[in-house]
Length: 148
Image (cartoon, rainbow, N blue to C red; front, side, top):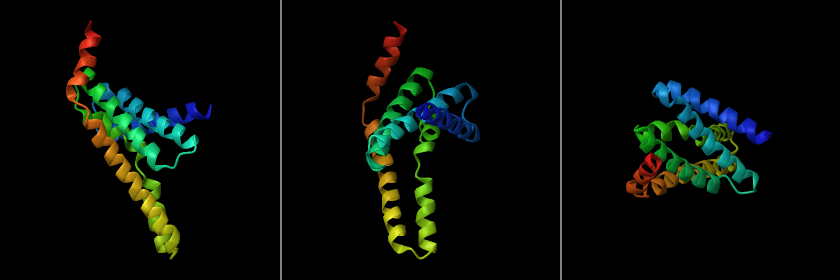
């Protein structure tokens, strides 16, 4: 039940961000699904006992592939799905706690949280790079096979 709630909340949060981002109205459900997909994958991997960095990398990589598939099938720029879908994975709380511990003079927590946040941000970047490393021609094969 917890996974379903996580999926739905992430979907609504991403959908809300897509509206704020002015995504095309016909793409809003796809944007919401992409964010929910990325988050639930991340959440499952964290529940399996992984640290937050590797699940961020895997979830972002899979999200990038999904965004590229949606972009080809829906004939829409990939950024519509990727920017909105990545919203739940961005380490906003890590940035907040880094600043909080820094201002409360707790240097140990501040530096450890800051390093973890930097690693997650780097994992997100690498996930996008790896996802875009797959040739575009493979994604067009998905569209062609869908027509037959």
